[in-house]
Image 1 (cartoon, one colour):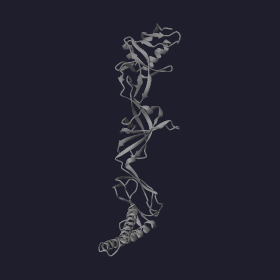
Image 2 (cartoon, one colour; image 1 turned 180 degrees about the horizontal axis):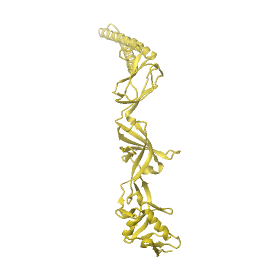
Image 3 (cartoon, helix red, strand yellow; image 1 turned 30 degrees about the vertical axis):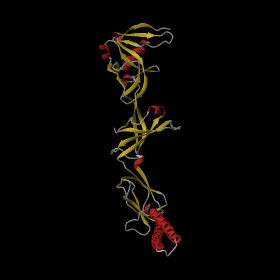
Image 4 (tube, one colour; image 1 turned 180 degrees about the vertical axis):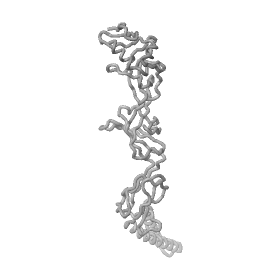
Amino acid sequence: MPCRSRFLPVLPFGLVLLAASCAAAGAAPVAIRLPAEQARALGVRDAAAVAATGIPLEHLPATVEPALERSAVVTAPYAGTVTRVLAVEGSEVAAGAPLARVQSRERMMLEADAGRAASQARLTARQAQRDAELLAEGIVPATRAESSRALQEQAGASQAQLARALALAPAAKGGLPGEYELRAPLAGRVLERRVAPGQALDAMAAAFVVADTTQLDVAIRAPAASRARLAAGQAVRIDGIGAQGRITAVGGAVDAASQTVPVRARFEASPALVPGQPVAVTLELPAPKGALALPRGALARVGRDSVVFAVTPEGYRVVSVEILGESAAQVVVRAPLAAGAAVAVAGTSALKALLAAGE
């Protein structure tokens, strides 16, 4: 049934409500005739709606982490006993700096094997050279020279293999037999230390975590509903700190339990950010065309609807809006209004009271 307009009785202060109502729906009044001076007396203040540049997604849980490609775990190549710890949590270390010393029976045996392999390699090299000279003089057959060369190559391969095994655990300078050093694979800060003097260490056990903390990652859990609007390069802000970063990766799967997707963002180092620190972040999602940004005070609830009060020559009219995002200071909405349209941003409770009085 088509809507019809009707005037409501005069209210205090000479205010009049004009209702555009539908008999079938019994809708509440949607327009208020209110002179500007009387609106000011009620504390109503207007401001222009602006085109939204982004939609804030606030207070998302996150954790500060070292950048994955800039961090490394230092493991013990051979089992042994920790004899010295040379770096602790928070230590700044250069690439190749010693972190701890470990004495290992296995490395001691490797040292002995490497010594024997070096002697064998020298012996077979001399024999191969001698047989090559004798072959040139026609004294020995070619098969003997070939056999000597094969033995030389075999001994050389064994020596190289043992040398590589020893290089995994570089010897401690001036150390005890079988004592080797765990060294930093990159320049950065020691984030974790899992060893102490006298501790028995298994082969391949993790001993330290070292990371370059000039840049840090923040691991975020974002609502699954926002997944399609998230993309690398979008802005991220850490609440309460103000640090600004950018999204570097968006997860491709939703966690069934929490209905969130993992998001990683990159930040420059800051004294306020420490790996392992829990934080809350705000993401800035792209706003759709026509979205408007308004102060939070502009938003009101009428029944089940979210509305704003748009300024008209006679006063105000109620405009239903769709909320796209909110922050502490503003709300982003989709509404049948143009950027620049004036809306009430303060005193909306007085306008709601006038609506209620006219129902």
